[in-house]
Length: 373
Image (cartoon, rainbow, N blue to C red):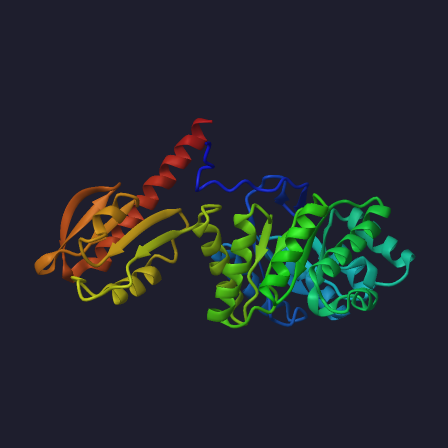
């Protein structure tokens, strides 16, 4: 009997679209998105929030464009940041045209909701003229009236049908540079809808559990829903929707991808919950250590384990390991092997220095390899 390797995730094959210079679908790395919560018309505040999200690792950032003042500010915003900007458009076709002209890399817009076929053609033409992709964004909370009448309530079939109806409008206008999402705040509904959509088309899919909640509850719901889909090979780009700072959405997005070995950024700290066997204060150490290592973007794994029960085993699988030992003297592992011992008083400073040195070494090797090419 052949057994599928347990760490392998076979990703669904999808078309590829470009959001600015970020490839989505077609085997490209899964991108992480977030959305600003500033008034887009306040260009300075929005730029600061976009830059903070980009520094945290956001590949793509969406901004809402509900009025003409917002699309007017968009031109300044786009020129001031280094990540592609998605303009979130609802109902008013002129906002879509203005956003494309202002330099948006993508329009989040449902073509069936912006008016007559002529208006749709105008928006599509603006997208074509300015190299703009689109995202069809179906939401269980705003399904079309005829679908609610047909199905009686929001359900996976209604959401998939909505997405495909909007897709056909774009296809009829000879436009295929788009991705689709079918979001819901109900994890079961969203996951079922995405599975149905994945079977019905080959367009790239943008994943999310919409209106997931606050930082802790929303993180849990998003990890269950998005993680479930990614594990099934579904999804090309993700956004974790939290009632929190957009930077937190980016961090959680990367944590989900890291947990599935789909993408790595920064230091992955593996630590025990601590117990009576711990030989140092694990919780306090990990808290400070994660804060001190937040600036590192190089993918690295660090294990911090309070005692020798699991410490050596975890250390074998990480770049740098730290295991509690007796009488305030602990073991440090490098590359999975015992390297040296360490006293209590300088644990965090010492580990930070080891990680920074290792990250610098890895980056130097990358630069050397690139120069050799």
